[in-house]
Structures are given as structure tokens and as C-alpha cells.
Image: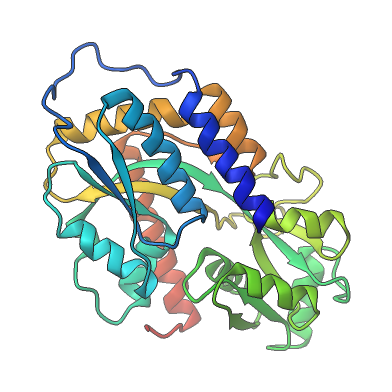
Length: 329
């Protein structure tokens, strides 16, 4: 955990000093009065996680470019609902932004009642990065590939136990999608974070789990865990010998995304300015390479592209959740 945090912080320091490159800036600034005061980036998670680190990476550079401090405001709790509600209730002038992820997209079906309407009150602004997860099994599990794991699950319905970092997390829903597309029944055990889940699979108390690449990689290299599939459509550069699950189950994809959204009502010109500057920051060649080494891919798409992606994620996972019969919390 310490090494992961250290590496992510190193990326943040790098971004602060990286030379601008990537997406072009507009010839004329259509919003000369923005920003007129410090900006706030609300992160609905605890410090040091990937959402927090990306927020700080972008915030450092925005502060440098615009001369207005970007304050990262961590507001964890209630499956990102606390931070999200704070964001949607903020003035819609572009000075308040929110880090969004899969949790934001699935809350409408994972939560019994939300104090806001995700589709109406929140506007996706930009996708900063995507990161696949790796499906690992304990060495004591006699499955060297995804097909073998599914065969075991078919032969012993419900006996294959998989861990996740929490209900509604990417690592949980990836497991549900695997069971759904593979036509099998597995038993989910949620943990309060990825670390305790990893400890239990290392101890052989659960059979398998989806883990983020960077913290899981040392256990794979040491032989304490066996990697059998990537959750992206294609193989990941960080683990080129590990097949994509889509090679066995065509169309399988369950990646983590890290984006930014704003409250509904922010002027289009302000959203354009925010999007263009953040895209330039995140797609700088050296930044892109640093993220790749962390197992993530820089995106930096347009506001329209991220909106379409976010809506698709909402629809896709709502279907998976309902088909799996998951109960709203």
C-alpha cells in the first residue's frame, strides 16, 4: 500500500512540472472571467486512492495555469452519495467539480433513494483515465484460465467464492458480469476496501477476485496469486501474457474509469474551457506514459464523448445489477 501511494504521488509531482502538450487550446478565450476565485474538486472518497490522486494531479496543473488554487475536498461516505450531493447543490458556475467513477453511475440502482437525480443534476465533463482490473485466483484453485474457472463454477454452483472491495464497486460488478456472461453462480463476499479482500485471497479464504493492477502485480510476480484474465477488451501492456477475459467471453469489459462532472447548469463555454485544459494536462505524452506504467490509460475526451460513455455505463450496469438480483442498499 505504501509503495502504491508513493508511486501515485510521484506521478502527481511529475504532472506539476510536465511541459504542456496534447489537446490544443482555443485561439480566443471565450470565458476571460473564469475562474474568478479558487476552484473546488470534490472527491467522494478518502485520500490517497486513485480518484484522489488524479484530482490532485489535475488540480496542481490547473492552479499553475490559471493562478487560482484548486482545492481538493475529500468527502467520503454513503457510497459516494455525500460528496455527490454536496457537488450538485453547489453553484453551477464551474468553480465546483466532482470526481466521478463507476460508483456514481450505479448508485441510482444500488441505492434505495438518492437525494438527487444523477442523470439530471450532474453533467459529465471529461474522462481522465481508464484502468482495467485483473482476475486472480489463489494458487490452490485448480484453474489456470477463465474457461477452467467457469467450468468449476458450473460443476459446483455457489461454491466459488469471490471477494471485492465493496458492494457496487468495479471489482464486485466485474464478478457479477463474469457470472452472468458465463452462465454460472458464484458467491460474493464484499470487504471494506481492496486491502482486506486481498489479504483473504492471499490466505486462501476466498477463491478469486478482481484487483487493480498496481497493488496486485507484486503478488502475481511472487506467485502468491495467479492471474487468469484482464477485464479490458484487450490485453494490458502491464501484463501482456494474461489474456483478456473477452477472448473467452466475447464482449466482456469491466474497467474502472476516473472522470470529472459538474452540477447541471454550468455554462457551456465554462465547461469547454475546463474540458480543454484538463484534456491538455492528462494527455501530455509524459503524463500518458506515467499513467500507463501505473496500469491506467489517459483518456481526455470531449464533454459529449464522456456524457455518452457515462450514460452507457449507467445503462449497462443497471442491467447487470438487476439480472444478478442485487438488493438496493
